[in-house]
Length: 298
Ligand SMILES: Nc1nc2c(ncn2[C@@H]2O[C@H](COP(=O)(O)OP(=O)(O)OP(=O)(O)O)[C@@H](O)[C@H]2O)c(=O)[nH]1
Ligand SMILES: [Mg+2]
Image (cartoon, rainbow, N blue to C red; front, top):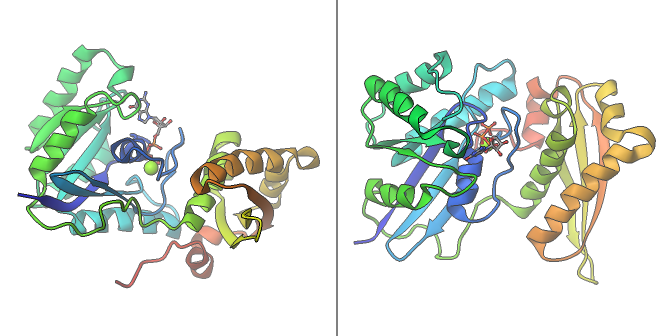
């Protein structure tokens, strides 16, 4: 009896959804950062074993949106719940209080007639005793298929989580080839690596105002891949910070993301970065479309 289906990974920002996706898939498909609202689109990761094919949908953290981009992020997260066969609701063990944001998600989940597993992540960072309180609080609010504490960082509890996922999935034939990993094109993944480097090196306000588009992605005859990308930012001051003194910062961002691209593509990469100011791009439909933040019509 083979099982196959879609599992949506949802939760508020920064609880470790993308880290969990990467851990479950054994590959870095989604970028991760200590800042909230890192993921902006639904990212698919597929795991195939002898007994199942699990198609994971990592989603943007659900939050109170301030821009059109924010609204889009919430909408795709919400849409992925509708498309999934079962759900992983991820919460952060280091932030045990249930706040309005979690309550809003619980309210939404209570209307979903699908198996839902509560995943309490980051258990490596808390005392075991504190978990009982979190488990108690959440189970008093809703009935979950299972509640499982894990650490996406260390891998603790992941094996058990996989067996719970198998249990929740419906019977069915494989939907993707056995060795299929993600629907994220390499070009887009490279743009995401650049964004991750920006999140790593710069303070909050800059990365949150940044979008990255890969304009050129081509293989040269000598096997080197040439990539040119534009970093779109909101203000002139952000542009100066991104470039840095004598171009230092942009060089650092370039070196860090190029190393990741070379690992992904298994070849040398020649990377060129450009910075462009486009104020208000997060509310601008055509800019959002250029960056791939528009709803797919399928
Ligand atoms: N200690 C600890 N930290 C973790 C764990 N999982 C994730 N983190 C950290 O939590 C932060 C957020 O991780 P992400 O995976 O980007 O979180 P997310 O839920 O995808 O965030 P958004 O995309 O913004 O919604 C990063 O700094 C991770 O390294 C874990 O199991 N233990
Ligand atoms: Mg994420």
